[in-house]
Image (cartoon, rainbow over all chains, first blue to last red; front, top):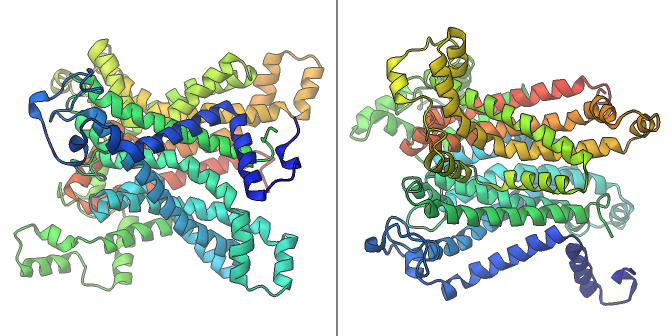
Length: 296
Length: 324
């Protein structure tokens, strides 16, 4: 089959077409992308189709209907305060995607510039940045996140900050490696010889060309970040009641799940599907961007 | 060495920048300003920061991690009491993950692109995507509530705990009861260990299987394997005596990473299974804002993690291909 890239077309359109072609090549990746898209739609449209939004966003309770098993009225059953679990789990999608985006985004915002500077400048600056990175990397990420979250105090925002603090060094290291391999490439040398200022070279030439491994890693991390934030909430360090965060729902479910298994089953299932989808997308992206494993 | 100093510096800095005042916590809620000032002096918080750090470091080197605000005991004493239960869980869990993960990965590589391979890869992806505490709760529903095969949680049945005393040798209940011949305790604690250890094994199992599969496949592509096959050596010999040896390196690294991860993962597992280990201690420290305890745990676990990685690096260096 002739590659679509052979035909003359506007460059951007062509790239999008080509990426679409690569993504749909692997069925598992397609499934992952599909699920992520559905999750996005669910998160955005949550208020539209959720039967009891008041159970999710406000502290409304309905004790008379406590711990009802799943039925036509309550698709996922109700919790100990009679709140509709379906509504809460759906709203939880919003929170989890938000946490994933913000925490990974913040980690990228710290890690990428540091890696860029360390890799491009080298020497003393590189030495200092990388030693600091090493120290952060010598903590297991979940442990660092727990410690920082515990010190900052309990809230969802602090949990996100804690996760970002535990995650940025990975991006710095990855970024630095890529930048070093690019630094001596002819196009960068050419830019240097033309007298382009270093900051401009770093941003316009090096940064844009070294982003793809970082993006792949970030999409893989999305799943683990969601798991970590749920773990923090589970320990009481993240979301606080009545927020419908999946980890927090599971944490309260701990007291009831033996008599009401649906209470823990559905939020957990939502989390598994989300994390699985992001892992599939990340794996797929890695396969596509790595020329060794790319199948055309 | 540098990394260890860095780790201690980072933990120290975290205690400095926390919003809460440790002196106020130490003195208690109803303390007067005077008492707080006295506490500050006692804790050495009136000294300049570098002095404080050096004092902290010299304390750490002598095994002094400070005093827990909650239990009013030295953190080190607490840790020593809680660590064996966690270590037991991690060791058994990691052993299970190897016992299942390795054969699974090897099988998957040998039968590449068959249904066996697809199934193994699916198990691996699931293992990595499952929230630990959710898996733990589901196992409880299945094996305790529905099947009744295993106990809900704890380390021993309360009946046994009250009636028998096993001499405290290593703190590993399994080992202690085995050595001293307390068979009932041994069996009982084994049953209690089953579910938490299985939960713990899920994540490393997936990663180990995935890694050994991809390393084996890589090795299978090398010339010496082609030669061995061309000589007509049975496939079993090629796989187990030729290929496997060279596929172990990366798996070992992944395994060490997993062990560090599992050490922290026990925090969640212990909370669900009410396992009296480090995780439960941490959870209590977190809920009561017991900063010295949190920092002590962080430091100890980070140091163990660093040492673990060092051991792996040394083991890998034994491979002549890695040696520089």
